[in-house]
Image 1: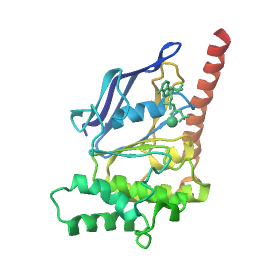
Image 2: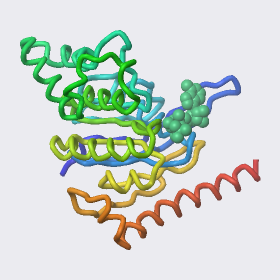
Image 3: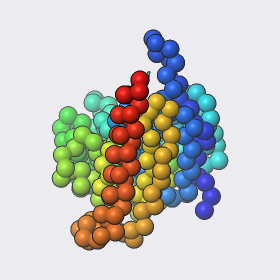
Image 4: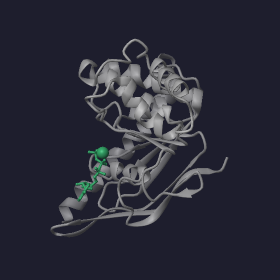
Length: 267
Ligand SMILES: Nc1ncnc2c1ncn2[C@@H]1O[C@H](COP(=O)(O)OP(=O)(O)OP(=O)(O)O)[C@@H](O)[C@H]1O
Ligand SMILES: [Mg+2]
């Protein structure tokens, strides 16, 4: 399988009052078509910075991001994005929020066709009965479901998720992880997802990319997740293999913590 989403020598340098701050430097990563890759690393290392550059919402200082053979230079409907906060327009219903993007992407379709698409994806995320509700009438978990439906309804080539379940309680989080896996299994959209949670990373992804601590963060290591799909959470938690992989991720993160301590001692 070829490279479908590729980060090549990516650099992000922010201008700050105390001078340029090199946050990400030499970030290289390639995802195959249909692959689900997670990105983990300590808070502040630059995960959102990398993702927002791929989304076209943050200027690239140096290097490039290529999606589906095209170099990114701005946001586009070929990339669906879901953030930690749902970002729905409060005066529009769930249906209308999803329709907003669908109208742009399926500009040549009929109203009926567009309506069917919106209904299909809202039903898929379990909101078939709540389509006419306003965001304020929906729980946080339901709002995030709308966000997921909105991203998938655009039939993007690439899905970019930045801690989409970070603000949810653990039960809702588990429910939405299963939902995301289910929808992803059907569509096999190339996905890059930022998460803090090693268990989430192992449950969802084909590979876990671990970022070094900033400044000048890059890919430190990549772990293959060989667990068979479709995955069964309970069964997985009973295997030694699961804990071996979990240990590997935690050891990397702890190593980064030690390196940061040494860096700060030296500074
Ligand atoms: N617009 C900006 N201007 C200056 N510095 C910024 C800007 N945006 C982010 N940074 C800095 O870049 C670094 C990386 O931020 P980023 O949000 O990418 O981290 P993150 O890995 O997503 O963290 P978290 O896990 O907490 O979400 C941080 O030190 C942050 O302060
Ligand atoms: Mg972030």
